[in-house]
Image (tube, rainbow, N blue to C red; front, side):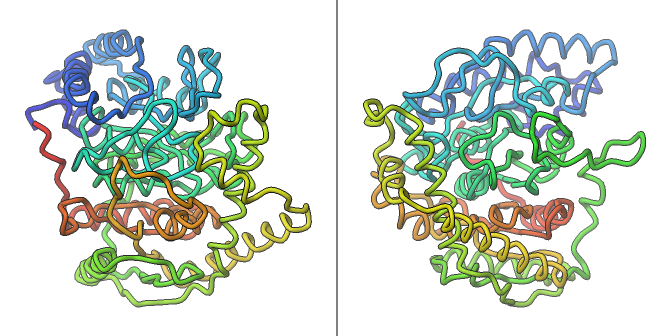
Length: 467
């Protein structure tokens, strides 16, 4: 592509290596695009004043032939639930601390060590609680494919930024679908890694099910970013040890081009309950299934034998939000998103015994999925039940919306902690992107990347024409 802002991370790195582009030129191209389009899209919570200096330092390293890491000079964004030293972490809330973060979160530290240019922090729903992309502090974020529609959430700004060309790579977080939902509605790739693969600190409201992960325009770029993010950090008590052999860090792009011939793939029609999905979502799954059969995979419908994940996640989500709300003085709670208050009110008064019952049910779901993925390499399903709703629509009855409009297909992978990825799959009749989800057994992030790459190669997906 002639516009550096629209190039993938791999393309940028290749251009830097042959001195065809510089990180300063790329940052300038991205910044001009942000200046032109972001007033409408509202993808950023804050811009990073250190970005020009980071780009200049990277340019000097490339000129000397000494890049310091796998993302040296690549423009990236970080969701505003994640600390960036020197910038406040507002979490989309008027009740959050306005003071700058004192230190970098693990993913931010990893990005800086790899030489990435952090251009800013992207918007989130308040504390990451819901899927429509608005929050009390920063307002409404809009979908680059159609400004009247939401990009999804809670990684709303990351999804919009990825589709709009505001940098090559973006860090989102996902506790019930918050990477995969905006990826699906914005026509980009979003990977929810295995739980513990990417370290997080401070841990948020959904610590037991939440992950951080990459969003981008290609599967290979997301794998490249995972190389950087998936590094052990002692601050996160759930963090996995580094997945590497002696003297060699793991490259998640290895074998990503291996194809899916011979793989066994299950089409999941029921994630423990009768999850809603419109005919276009079903059509996207059927299209992906046929495509994967054409590529040599064995594809069949199968039942994972899951318990009612809707009932389990409703409590995981609701109790976490109730605890969050009750951590604020009662005199200030009126400043929170009204829907957040509604969910909290519906989830007060549970006994310790009831909470332990829901944790036992979560483990039952994880056990069922572990047995299921011993038989199948990949699990194919919808990502979202419908195309993205209007950006200005009010959030009505969020307890029901969680299952009727937002996360019926995504939340189970958070409960079971397995990897899952959203990959584009054509367009709906209204011209907005469609997508499918691939999941694999716990810690088999390589399989979801490989499966998504096979789909991407067979059916490339464009960017929106924003001029």
